[in-house]
Image 1 (cartoon, rainbow, N blue to C red):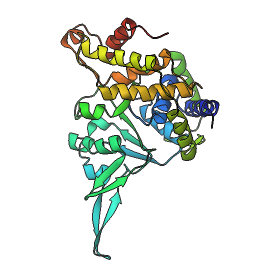
Image 2 (cartoon, rainbow, N blue to C red; image 1 turned 135 degrees about the vertical axis):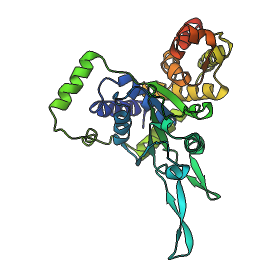
Image 3 (cartoon, rainbow, N blue to C red; image 1 turned 90 degrees about the vertical axis):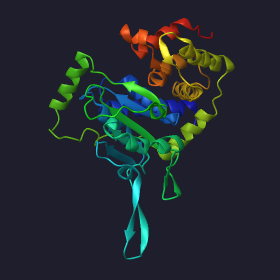
Length: 318
């Protein structure tokens, strides 16, 4: 496989997902970057903005095993990971695997589960394995979590801890589409049978597990030059020095950005990265990894405003 083939596969994936989800081109592209960079993604937005549909369409276009967990306040860690059940026929405990044993996992409304259930995903997301009853079970390199959460309704929710947020490569803000796109959605749905849950049934699977492995191997061969690495580091270190940020991004965040930049370059059909690759991923990679200071919060500035200001202040390499 060549970089041109990889770029063509990415375009085919974007086109296929775009058949079901209209007006979210940037989110789709960042989802693909995360997939190739072996990262997890958190989708945040108000109800009815196609977060779940986007995750389902993403999985439908991949020839990978799909699992879904609907998080609720009474969900237990065993409901996510699985549990051992005694089999009276064999007088032995038999492991019943939970939905986490999949390749693409949709964690729907993840902030509705209590912290101990949210934490059950930590090892799976970080190490791609699960420890149950003293044994480790490998989830495979294709294991990817796409989680959703609703930022509006806070009753009965549990904010994700910083340690878990840091396991997500990107946090994508999903907002309402423009009026023209919203009209196109209505026209599309009005011309189809009234069936719920069938939006992704007609999507073709355009990327197999073997092809994904080839794409990732190609991305692994891309080496970032020192000027790009220095640019990433300057941006990350600036978050620790900014008066608007109480807690800045970590070294792990800088490393995650580097992986995303390599994937972004490959999707663009290049074996080298440019500053625009960094600028494309820096905000979604850091918006959930920084804690704003009181001055920024009082002035009503969000993480995106503060990060955009840092990007404008740090000179990009030429």
